[in-house]
Length: 240
Image (cartoon, rainbow, N blue to C red; front, side, top):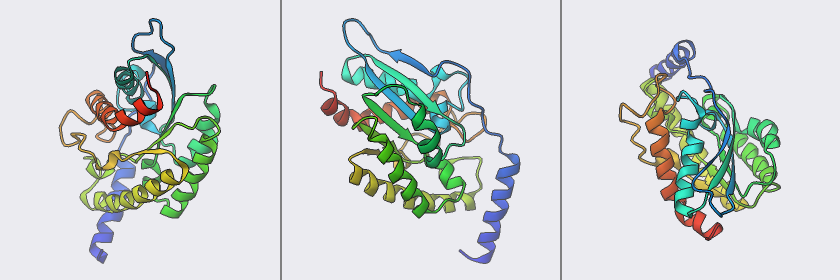
């Protein structure tokens, strides 16, 4: 990138810090159960991570990504799913390891880890990312053998970021994604590469008012796509 390009990136970073007002964590319960519970023991699912886990972008936790995924997983497995969400706005993978994983109650059947976007925005190196993700998976294995790791979100599609900054972010996400795939394979965790999926982020109804987090439609669509991507994994790990 030439000097002019670098200057534009710095300008867009400054603008983003001073003008983007992120949606807060919504009110509502951070646990619940989806699906018909008649005569069946529910699958227990804990989800730890960043603002997507916290449901930022909707007006209540019940409309967030975690309960939407629980609905999809319940439909796929034909059994209820009891979910718990441990999410914080701005959480990096390091915070997941040190602050959020220790909050998980009990021994979940399934653990989902959703982080990475804030590591990108904080300009953390891929070497730092590899160290933090590896350490987090070491801790997570003590809770359950069934671990799913998500990629960062599609920051390079966010209308709130400038075009030059989005291109820099795209390159960082590519590095982070490739590193994550290798580490997850090493630790036996399932990886969901949502950064390269068509989640209809170009549609006007995808983003919340802050133009950064998904809105109701965005979370629902991503949950449906997640169910499709994890169908084989779920049915193999949790047969009827």
